[in-house]
Length: 280
Image (cartoon, rainbow, N blue to C red; front, top):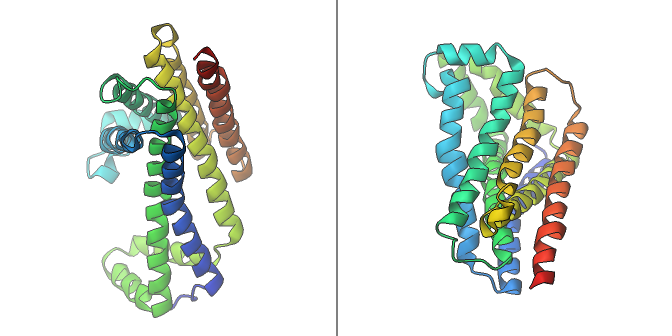
């Protein structure tokens, strides 16, 4: 099978994206910890929190509940019930990240970070949490896309798709879609991905500050459920769009992520972090 070669511009953009999504989070973490004389282990704990609570605990349970066939499980009654109700499906899509990720922050601040009370701790943890999410979700994606692009240009991708066609014909269309997407990849596509991750990174940093102060001051424990609600609402809106309950353009979805990211970060920064400095 023959596929149009991926142009040099597209290859360059894929490499640039890979560098941005793998290296920039590390640079941000290093600059922040050096400038604020923070312990880098706090950043690493934030990264570990995401891996443990979002990837190891949350995703398998969520997928087994709403997408059991992708887990190699039969379509059980609960999955049938949920998938027949798009609003409920979208709520679960949003609720799982909200509960698991914010609870992960809570556990981290209550255990391994319980003795770190300096106000920078919340931001350091958020940098680790948001940074590793970028590196895993988009960094690995761009590694895969770059590998596909190289295989397309060397002709090996067509051989792989030919083998797939013989064994699983229903997956051939996905191969053509990947090739078409890479051939049409543009600077605008990369820019959208970068901007979206910036706002998501801001949200995670802001949410970490919320939960940090919920743990630091018992009177502010309500900030923890607030973080869950905000996180759930942001992801549930995307879930409603995926389920076809609402029909939002990609730009509108980015605007929604921007509102949540900027709002949560600035709210936590000025109402909690900055006031902590003033009191200090």
